[in-house]
Image (cartoon, rainbow over all chains, first blue to last red; front, side, top):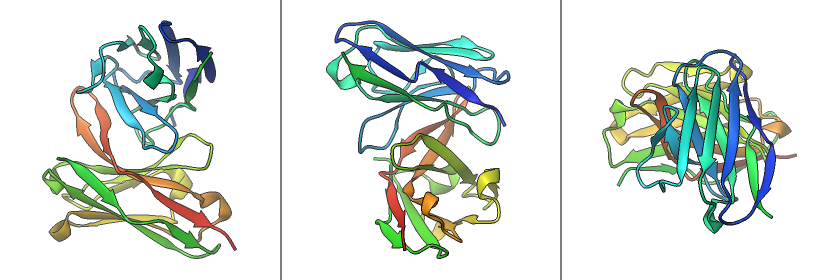
Amino acid sequence: DIQMTQSPSSLSASVGDRVTITCRASQTINSYLNWYQQKPGEAPRLLIYAVSSLQSGVPSRFSGSGSGTYFTLTISSLQPEDFATYYCQQSFSNPRTFGQGTRLEIK
Amino acid sequence: QVQLVQSGAEVKKPGASVRVSCKASGYTFSDYYLHWVRQAPGQGLEWMGWINPNSGGTSYAQNFQGRVTMTRDTSVSTAYMDLSRLRSDDTAVYYCVRERYNSAYYLDVWGKGTTVTVSS
């Protein structure tokens, strides 16, 4: 199985900050890397697919990059609605593993 | 609009089985794989498997092999996830999710989730 490791596990930041979350895969996954956002009590929401493609309706302050085994999610200027938990997921092979999540909290 | 509507919350005793349904609307049911993902209280997301609604073919995570069965009824655009021999650590929210492909496979439409509580 491919292991996905996110860092940090939690992060405190302020509105307007630029933040970056990293995700490492235990083996190469080409471009089969997606990011999801989840708010308490809600289902996850797709933000970015195939490393860097923004899902329809997602604000442009979200961006993704990376290749092979190292990937990042960047939020250029945090907004109040961005405080949530973020998960990466590989879709290169079964089982489709998720990272453990990064909880983004208000400082 | 594209929707996945899941069945309501369930409370089960250890050792019992549960069936969660997922009714798709707003798109051609057979055209997209459906995945099941669960989330235990306060925990992360755990992938359970997928079903190909067109063929009925399935793939399950090793953790659930022998206990999970995913099926579908194309006549009502509904997928089902059966989980047997329930344990307390199966208490979780279960999501059905549609998968698309565009340079990568990704989960673009999520159901609201079904809470399954396993308690004696």
